[in-house]
Amino acid sequence: MTTWVGRTAVEIAAAVREKRVTPREVVAEHLARIERLDGRVGAFRTVRAAAALAEADELATRDLGELPLAGVPLAVKDNLPVRGESNRNGSAATPDTPADHDHVTVARLRAAGAVVVGLTNVPELCIFGTTEGVHGTARNPWDLSRTAGGSSGGSAAAVAAGMVPIALGNDGMGSLRIPAANCGLVTLKPGHGVVPAGIGHGDWFGMSENGPLATTVEDARLMFSLLADTEVLRPSEPVTRKIAVSVRSPLAGVSVGRPYTTAAREAAGLLAGAGHQVRPADPPYPLWLSTTSLAHWTAGTAVDAEDLDTRRLARRTRVHAAVGRRFVAGVRKGERREQLRKRLEPFFEEYDVLLTPALARRGPAAAAWHERGWLRNLMANTNYSPLTPPWNLTGWPAMSVPFGTLPSGAPCAVQLVGRPGSESALLDVAGQLEELRPWRRTAPLDQAVAGS
Image 1 (cartoon, rainbow, N blue to C red):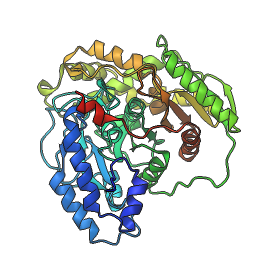
Image 2 (spheres, rainbow, N blue to C red; image 1 turned 180 degrees about the vertical axis):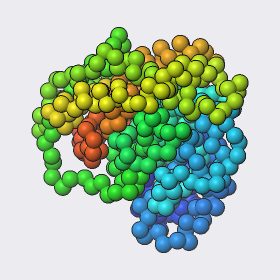
Image 3 (cartoon, rainbow, N blue to C red; image 1 turned 30 degrees about the vertical axis):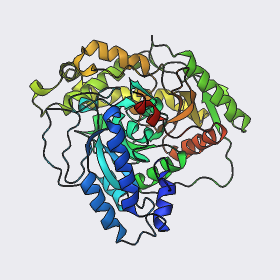
Image 4 (cartoon, one colour; image 1 turned 90 degrees about the vertical axis):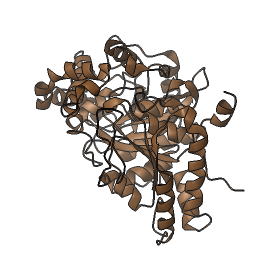
């Protein structure tokens, strides 16, 4: 019997279009996997089993020939509206009322033939790089004792566990790249304005972007094309690019662990062997980047929490918002972000792509971080994920790409960053890394759960 779990979105859609399998069969098989495994993983806040099957049946009545995601199961991060479902944003303080519309990104993926099977867990208000709270804890399918990351942790866990081939998430300070790096996935945070945002109250001052989570670069490229409503093709001939490799943390006082620096250097070596011009070079990160990152991170939360009953928020969230309120007016001016862009622009005039480690160390334990103090959460997040925030502040595109494994056997990853409009170039370089160092698509979760 042919199984569709573990297949890519491209493979599934081709089979559905060619009538080798029906949308219902594909969706039902993935729903069965969710039912069997998600009790341990915690990827989903809610599963739309009956609705997804009904939508799969309705899809089968349509002309499937032109649908690039025909019958592909999709998970959606629980801070984006999905028609008929509540949008809880990881909190007890948000209303439990069904949305009357799909977010534009959800609508675009559904129009392409995707079937939404559920909404995935996030930390409260999508603040932190670990995913846990009143709606559940998302664990890394490669190591169930560790967090999946955050804030798109549930979406990443769902894909890495083979519960869906693709998922939709978003990234305001690393919230796609952090869980993707933890879980061995490909993701792309687009540059500002490339994909519709509409996340929370103002997209964290324009820093948050919606993007794909996938197991292959091909799936990520397809999903990004649909989200951006533009066709992103792979070049027919190899393109030689100038690539800078840097293993320095952008945030002063935060170090990067050896497995992650080693991965970045090895990836650089492979790309040099493939013909790219690669050399070590550190971007001129300013000393004030740490305080600027903190100000924007907390101020975004302060704005998102304005209309909520703060008594129903977790203590770490209340403190984060309280700290951020003093920064909101200054952050809205955007002066520091503009200074950062001007400081970094000459570097990206010299280099096409910046290659860095994706993380500084492995993700923290899967624990009740929402019950711990704010400072403890702040330090845990900063120490393991210092490399993502600069590219939300600049609004430039950045990817996380699996590359090698950690001593524990869990995935390692590198980050690719480019100037505005370079999403296609980043996908091309990621595709070369995928060919040069293939990675396992999904975690061997069945054995881990069976033996628990």
